[in-house]
Image 1 (cartoon, rainbow, N blue to C red):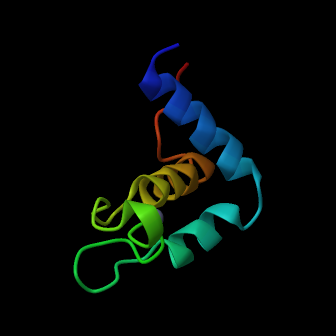
Image 2 (cartoon, rainbow, N blue to C red; image 1 turned 120 degrees about the horizontal axis):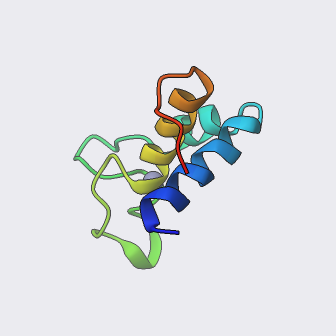
Length: 73
Ligand SMILES: [Zn+2]
């Protein structure tokens, strides 16, 4: 299983969890300087540009739920 397929499966699982993707999108927001509010704090400070991986994953999950993402894998 390649990383892209694993990524998609993760998005599918997230899509099944009511409200989780929406919460991730709300929390993993741009801090106003092009970085994620959550991911750019702590030890990883400065390493995460927004949209971060979790924001992208949540976006993908919502696309999956809405039937907008191609299903494969
Ligand atoms: Zn983030």
